[in-house]
Amino acid sequence: MQSPANFAIRNALKELKEKNNLDLIFLTCIDVEKRFNTFVVIDDNSKILLENALNITFENNVAKRNGIIMRKEIVPLLKELLESE
Picture 1 (cartoon, rainbow, N blue to C red):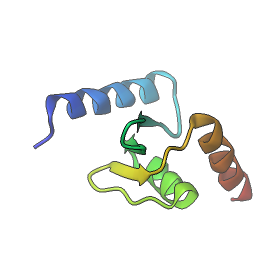
Picture 2 (cartoon, one colour):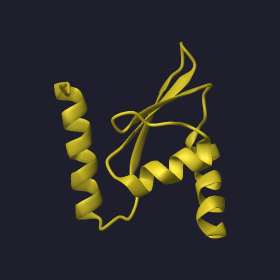
Picture 3 (cartoon, helix red, strand yellow):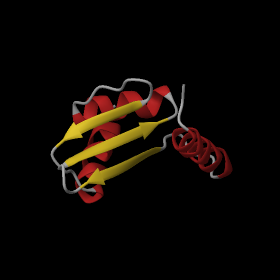
Picture 4 (cartoon, rainbow, N blue to C red):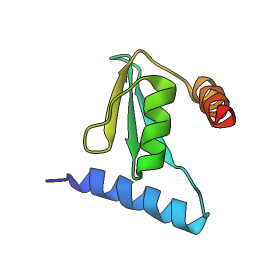
């Protein structure tokens, strides 16, 4: 069963994707103290892109990546992978 917070996050991502006519969307949150990122996706294309770019695995559209990676590091990795296709 999804938690209310998880449900709200997925709904917000869905609304943003539809409202802005986006092909891909994800959320990443950083736990600075425990030094990891959590990624949330709502679609297979975003999931596949992140799995390939960051070498992570999703379970129920959520993935954990040990070690902190910042947005300014993620975007170039995603861009490089998208441009190579």
